[in-house]
Image (cartoon, rainbow, N blue to C red; front, top):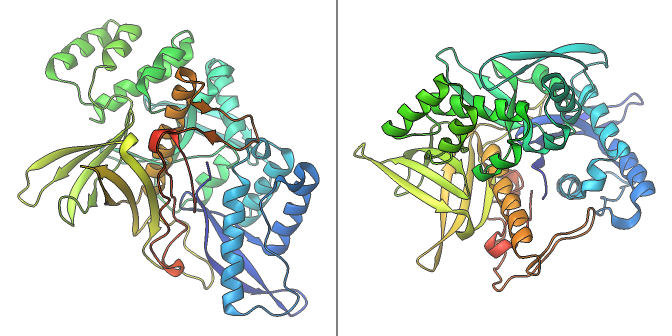
Length: 438
């Protein structure tokens, strides 16, 4: 699937010859990822083309005359689409020419040189592990270093990820975003404008039954056991009183296996819970707490009379969703580092044979979108294993082919370009996945 790349703002800068050039501010998952010139991206595209040939998406053409405002906006749109599309090929994502360029522009943007550094990686129980890395090490590389230090089996790395997490004095924490493989954790941490940021190691799957695949690795069991305890303590997972008593007894016995088996029965176990936000259901302005996992979006909505209502949206009835930025960005000396204000995620949902839009206003809209994509990809893998004749799983670098008994119409973007970051649009009916925008 496409990544959450967007270029919502650009600045004109003077060059050494007295002319001017455009510097594009590229955001990934709502955070400033890098600032880059068209000429840099053009050279990168040529390097990629020498390796991958004509399978690359189209790159916006050069202009040899001065660009008009409309031409500049068109180029920005085209570069945005290029970045979103070029990340769809898994072979390209792992290539040196792809990763090395993105490492370089991240370092250059934040004026960080490649050098040795120490980085604290926080575990779910609050302890941290100090690892020695290079400032230019990617999240994928840092995860490998951490896994060797704690004895985590290398073949299980795909079930875990590094996250930017914000901690609070009262013990509360927020998962802000998952670091993608080619992001530089050291740079992301140093460049953040948010206080009390840390890099945390957490499991990265939303189907609780996948715990069973990790039970033969002691380090993996330790990690998911720590996270289960933390999620219950933070009230992300919500056991009944009887379940809580049994879990506390198993925790005292340090019986991790039985503890995790019982956790499977706990409401919202293995879900990601977002910070309190607002939604438009059943009426605009209602407060809600979202928990995402196990192929559903679970909402605890506070009604105008302060009563609460639990509403569950099943992912197999979600047609598409869109992430929209409702504010404006500075384009003078430099844009803001994050897009976490005035964000909304809206999804189209089938209820009583009618499609309706449900809107959530949350600064964690990109994390929510990543979770929805993760649930879809896990469901596709499971469907492919159960019904290989129905869904053809593509080889790396090839397009996906999905066979479905039902087709659904793609929904186009609904807000003008000037007020939105390119919107995610994912059709997830009966295994069919289409993305336009992100």
